[in-house]
Length: 53
Image (cartoon, rainbow, N blue to C red):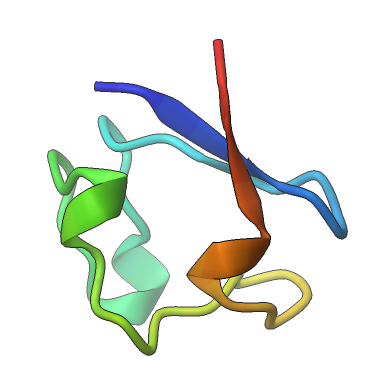
């Protein structure tokens, strides 16, 4: 699964890790995140993320 980086603060969403602090289980693809999910560091929405290597 691909990782995504926040264009605002640089936070990297890694599907292998998920976002357990916000109820997102490991193995959750970026595309499967809830529409209202936000960057845990700066609070921007999914539309402010870019695919990364």
